[in-house]
Figure 1 (spheres, rainbow, N blue to C red):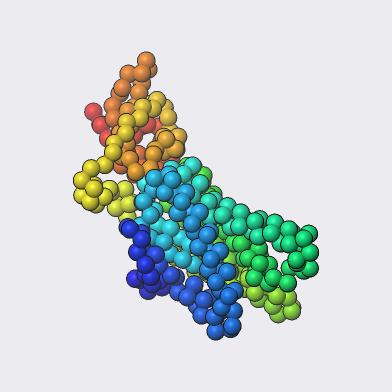
Figure 2 (cartoon, one colour; figure 1 turned 30 degrees about the vertical axis):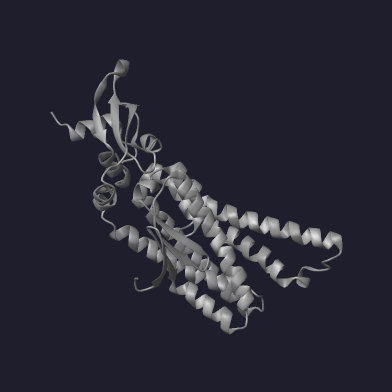
Length: 308
């Protein structure tokens, strides 16, 4: 448990935690007499997060912690996973996809009930109408391209190829602070003008909080500690190793897209006529990637680690 989250369960090696903002939202809804509404909200949130978990498991990632926020959940994955842009993007989009899917199914059910005459207006079944609105809201909010939202993780997975993971994280947290501030101002202005823009007024500060938390985390993480898999090796006693061969002029950004989750890689750097010039460890590759050296050639990486 840390200062702003509480562990409520442990599923295998995954710790499930509630962020304090989620607990506050739950208390407000329950004491305001919206207990059933909270169940719809919590169930939709769980289905959203299930998309992330299933996608991560399918791709072979280890999820060490899931922190649940009012707008979604933040999954802490083994850091090597975040360096595979395609995989990172798939996991990021899986949550909004589930929310959009549930909203579509609930909306189709609404239309079916209206056509059958069982439903006159959406307010006839308010919880069904809420199910549509909550999941549509989850989809739209989480697709905003900023951290800590899924849209920000999706953009970061591509931006990291150009500027490195740390710098991409910094840029997306800045967008998070800007987006959260704009949403807060618009929400409060809307409420003052008599509009029911409660979602913006609440989501804005939460996004600001999450962006600040992401920025602090990115700033404090030790790069070599992130890359170190020794603890996992001690636990499992073995790690699968894969060799991949790349041309000497391939860039770091190109090579990291070939990495597979849950494997340690040895990169064979090939010159002309497929002659192997030498080997580069995954650690060296990812160190360059994290440090922003995505433009470096594999020949440069090999020469730096094997000076004559």
